[in-house]
Image (cartoon, rainbow, N blue to C red; front, side, top):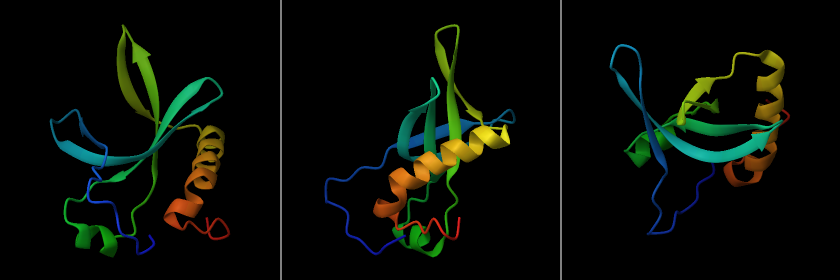
Length: 105
């Protein structure tokens, strides 16, 4: 991630998910996009400590937004082709902002 200063009023978009065992996980939402009629989020594990963020090489996680009975939920993308297409979409959208080298991806 490039060494860049964030504006003082910057507030990350944090998403907290609870698994089947009741364990909570927090993610920072970096981007959202629509692809082939589906909505996707690009997230990374959230770390409150900015030094911890810089030391980690965070992996981008792609999640599909679904809806059931009027309620939204997030689902992991299991299909390899779908994951590849959506990952490429986010990589191109985020490469300049987050200094992603697409040649290494």
